Length: 396
Ligand SMILES: Cc1ncc(COP(=O)(O)O)c(C=O)c1O
Image (cartoon, rainbow, N blue to C red; front, side, top):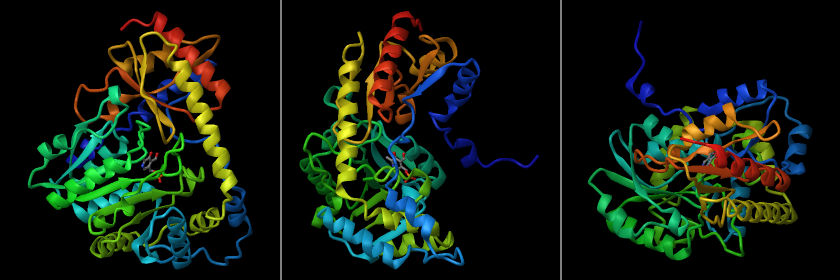
């Protein structure tokens, strides 16, 4: 039989999706499963975006330009200007989700065996994109004790080698919910300039900043014009995960020219989804005000309920819609499986994301889980109660 590539064998499985067969088993047993494991918001997509694809008058569903339609990119630039981020439409390449923007960024700045430093825990698919690009993730550990703030800059500096090409941050963070301050971004700016590295910021959760805090984009740091690459997406902002539209933004012309070649190879981002995403930019501010109010309410409920659970430690998230909780268990992978297979409270159980998959240092995060608060408050209260009851009887 012909053989599978080494790269293919090394591609990591999604740490969340590997629990799916156990969830299916739970459904077959007639259990209700509260999904705390995925980042699929239950918030309604803005009506303007849904309407735009219903009323379009296209006769041919043609390719658009590889970098995305000019009209859409002009409007994205205006969206950024409203967020005090000043870029031109030709600093933007529209992609098939933030996922493709990450692949283009990796492909544009790194060769096989190059290294990228990422504070962990991080969005698990960074591992997959790195493996697909043949590059090595070098993790720097951030800690639950200080809410997963930026690790001391000396820790980054220690890890820089001749192969290091960049630092990647997620702001606000999935899975940590941490929102980097302007001061932390400035520290990163200094280190990337000093060592001539790229700084990639995944800002797909930009709007999800709570408690009056404002998100500070790396594109607002003018001195970073040659260094900064932003990854963005409509998926979470407008609850449009299925549209598959995102973008890569950089003031560095060489980065854009290179990313464009990757974009040309895949011809075009999806046409109908660009129409929906362009219309989504007309979403009234009241939509975001309501969404943020809802998430803050959910976060407050979740954190206060979790704090009542004995032996559990939780970081207080200031953004996105995730938090990391440390449990009094040895192996949260086994615990998550047990919850689905062997446990219920009146026919109801929960599905959580074991956090080890969000670390690349082996053995770290084994007693942690990620909780996504994408369910309504009543469901969150029930879910935490199930977790509390489960921890009373679980033995590992
Ligand atoms: C931090 C982060 N970056 C990127 C993505 C990719 O999103 P998409 O490809 O849907 O834009 C996600 C999706 O969950 C994410 O959480």
